Length: 101
Image (spheres, rainbow, N blue to C red):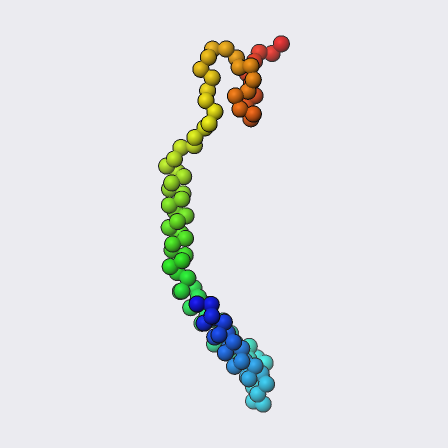
């Protein structure tokens, strides 16, 4: 796909150069030639050709969001079932619970 885009831009660039250096041409005509024959049609073609990829990426993102919404967060830290205060934290991020001295 990109080979066609590069080739078409080359052809349009050569058309614009020929317009600019022609005895009857001008730089404004060259710019208009490049925009109207090159950039505008190619942007439309590239947008249309990328539509299946955009749809697939959107479906993959929606599936990932749906999967993450269904699965509840899993904690690896098990709660202390005993009635005593723990001597140390169960996890490094959790401070132990004890009475103030």
